[in-house]
Image (cartoon, one colour):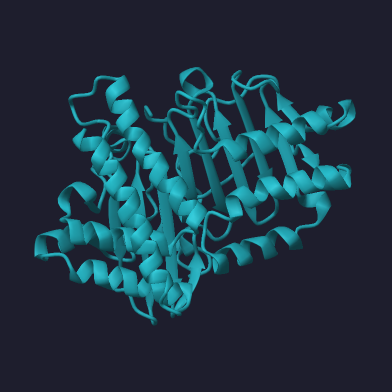
Length: 359
């Protein structure tokens, strides 16, 4: 009962936080700066030491979407940040205001719903060790929030990993943007990521045989998104899939609606920039690829990519009831290339190979 109440309180508090900060007629960047500073100023020294990190810290780009124990096993250290568990009610409200500053209303609802699924997993798995915990989401601010200089922030835990990078008052990156859901479908049929699944399957089923021959790149879906949590998103030696130039106008409308599910998770100003990138992509370079059978519940994967961005979706784990989705910017993740910082990171930002941890 206490945990169920906590979930409701978190959702309500975040909604209030989102509304309160939305009424401030400022840019997305200023809203983030205000929210980050208010959050940090509300913390004591101990909390602030956990919530603050150096902007040039290597672990700013070492991200993941797995539970804490799997993160520890992957990187050899725990997640940086301050969790809901270590915040008082006012601090939680301010943390939620920061979370809201980086998401649209739809995106915020999606994030909080995904967080609440941890309680379902806790009950389902009879977890008494704390692996599943709705309070284990970490808030981290890298650098000093200001309208000058470089800084960023992150919210991360199981199935939520959100990253923002700002330079001189301009948001230069809101990527990676990761949402997952376990269970993908709960009792009664509710799905946190339902539209992401349905629109893709609608597009697949609308393709004729020739189009499907190009679009379907594997008979069996991959066990996860191909880019996993690599520092840099790369797809090497992967088939192209079907180009939008080979689709009908109606099929391209469905493709656009599917892309919009990922674009619209972020605030309007960020979403507008993503739409510009998509719109500027030639239809011959806008690709849709599918792996797995076309029927629901059998395990499926798809990706949509252009020269500058990548969307991936996978639902194969736990009998195809465990989904992962991500938006990646090939050159813009963590603001790396835009800030000319790529030389500081893993193998010049080319990513690192690692085994997929347990999710």
